[in-house]
Every structure is written in C-alpha cells, then in structure tokens.
Image (cartoon, rainbow, N blue to C red):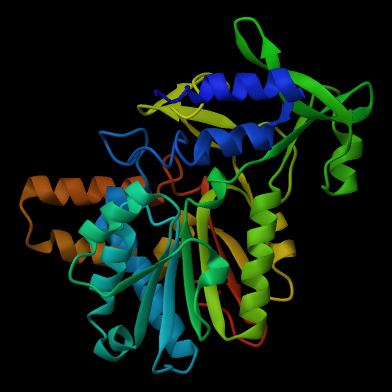
Length: 357
C-alpha cells in the first residue's frame, strides 16, 4: 500500500479539523516521521538544498574545536567531559572538531562524544563520517548524560517551528494555514498577541508579521537549567537578529533556490531567523554572552591565522580556495554578519573564549 503524500495528509487534516498553526505546518513538513524533510533525505552540500559553514571549510570546525578546548581549560580540565552537538548534519562539524581536539591529547582523552539526532538517515551518515571514533547518540537534549558539558548547535534553531502573528486593524491575530484552491494558503486565526516586548507590538504598523519560536525557547530553557545546575557552556551559531524584532523571515529553500513556503511540504527546507535575545532570556539562570557576529567570533578565535597556515605551502589554486572559504565565513556580505554566535554558561564562569573584549 502506497503512503499518501504529506500534502494529502496535511490537506485532509485541515479539512477535518480546520486551519493549523504555521508551527504545526512547519513541524509536519520538517519532522513527520515518514515524510518529513529531515527524516527522508540528506539535504546538505552542493548536491542537496543548502550548504552550512562546516561544509564550506574545515577551518570552521577547527575554530569551534579550539573554542571547546579552551572552554575545557576554563572548566578546570575535568577528566571526563560530555561534548555534544545538536543537529549534527552529516557529522562534518564534529569530525573537524575532534581532529582539532587531537592537538591537545588530555582534552581529547576526556571527551565523551554525543550527537543529538532524530533522523535515522542522518544518524547513519554521521556514523560513516565519524567511523573510528567512539560516538553515542541521543534523540533529545534531556537524554544526555550528567557531568560537565560542552554543547554546540550550528544551524539548529532556525529549523525549529515558528508561530506567526499578523497585525490587522490595530490588533494581533495568529496566522494559520488553511485550504484555498489550488492548495494551502495563509488565513487569519484567533485574536492573540505574540509574547514579544510590548513596545514592538504597539509600534508595529498594520500588516506587520511577528514570529515566535516556542520550541526554541523551550530548548534554550532546558539548556540554561542544565548549565546552571552543572558546570558547562553551550555555543549556538545561526542566522538571525541579536535583539527581538518583528518582521516575517520564514522562508523555504530547495536546490539552493528560494521556494514557495507552503508548496510541496516535506520537499523543501523551512527556516526562520533566530531571535537570540529571546533565547538568552529563556536560558536564565544561565548567563548569556553575545550575540557576536560570526565574523567577529571567528576573527577572535584566530581563523585568519589558521587560513594563512593552510595556504602557506599550498598551490596557488588551493590557496585561492582557502581565501574564498575564509571570505564566505567572515565577510559582511557573506555569512559574517547575518550569522550570530551566542554562548550560554554557568553563571559563575567568566567570559567564554572569544567573548572577551
């Protein structure tokens, strides 16, 4: 028996129960256990739908590996440390981080490495990438073992479902997804204001869209509670805004091109800009540092020096490639400004590496 398409399943759900929230539509499109975007494919790289920083250059993972090593020192060099990555993609970032960690044998020996992943297909790919390393998997952050923790989340929060709200006639309404020929369409839902700073809501013009990510806040709260209870730090890297703001950022990407948001659920990536201020508030009592721009953070970690080292004995073509990779990661016109870096830490810890000055 052939399984219906996700489009057909969602359409039937809406016909029976009425319009669904944007967050519910996004959750089904991305994470349906059989037909979701992330459960059924490997979306990364030139042959997929988008390219992340670890796929651009080994230097990115090396800088994050260095950050972890310095953070381990700041934690007092515990003999056992949980190093975890959430949303680890193909395992490329962790592979590069572990290669960098090998330069500090005592640090590498202390690591208990965990990947938090829900997709069986990506789990299998991660196992291939990290063959030869002792790796453990968990499906939820809460399943990680106790102990000192270093957590990395690269382009995870942008893929968590968002609710949308629209201001009409001076009032806020939740935006829903309904059915209108020939397919899905945004429709007005109940009168409900988003949980954002009041001044943003009051000064917004009619027609303004606001977004809220409850799943992101809940995850940040869980991370913050863990870091306040046990020593550790978390590094969150994603694209978004450092201060809470209104505006529509939800987008779909397929084969490296923009795609209609409501078309072909399960076949395109859906993402929204991350509200880093909201994450920092949710993580209290952990302390937040940043958000810095990615260019500033990688610059402070020494990525330009690393690029020069790699290019020193390289052929002209390889040296040019390294320079191009560096530009993509740190230049304002590329990923350097749009992407931000937020650190969360136990409140008693000093400024994390890269966040001083």
